[in-house]
Image 1 (cartoon, rainbow, N blue to C red):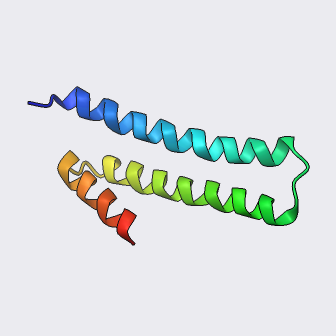
Image 2 (tube, rainbow, N blue to C red):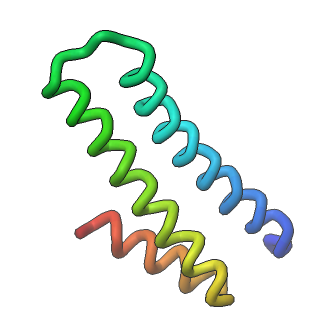
Length: 79
């Protein structure tokens, strides 16, 4: 049986991955002389990842059960 702390660790790990991806995109834009299309692409990717993170944090803050949070996350991926 999965313990609550194990689920929290998985959720936190997923969130950290999202943060790392968004940060990497932003740091790449800041560190390199990129063309406008690449800058827009990287910033759009970062924005989308942060939107996903915001949704996940909102679900957790609302106190939704982990299985409902996972169900919502799966549904969002299909949209």
